[in-house]
Length: 199
View 1: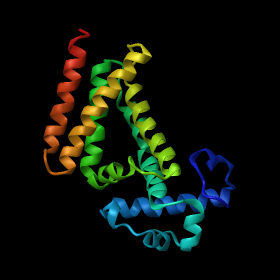
View 2: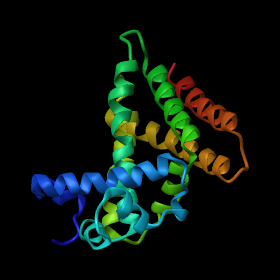
View 3: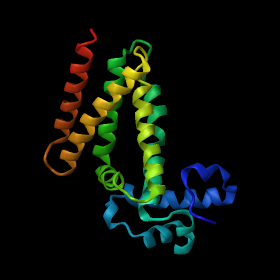
View 4: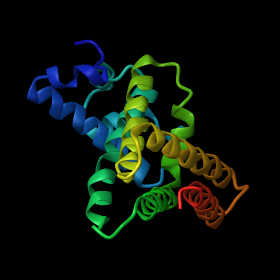
């Protein structure tokens, strides 16, 4: 079996899907437990998953490919939970603001995931790039879904702007140059500016 790209996952037989999921879960557990991405050894993931190292590499071309799959798995619960928090009385501004702050709090609880994201966004592994793009698309989709009263192209521009501000400030926080309060404040300022022009 060759290494599986995101587009090929549905073609995997059920037992191979389960084994791949087992590997991703083991890698995710290591990160959730506080192990930094750069300290994770692929051999440790294989041991945790109960598979041979060679088996792991049949599913993932590299550590970057594996951890791009981990980020994608980690992001799965974001959109449904965000939608449950919405109320009919909410406006676009309130929904977007809440989702942005929720994303920040997720990284605050698990800063190692954001540091992994920084590493993975510059990966040269094509499989990692594909999965990382799916991860980024999932974030963008969750944020865009908050904007129900604007045209799609305008919603995309709003999400790109606010997400860029959030990512820039999160980087500063991850590097010890800003507090998490600074991140929240910067996002609030960006949302305020955007929606003040729409009132």
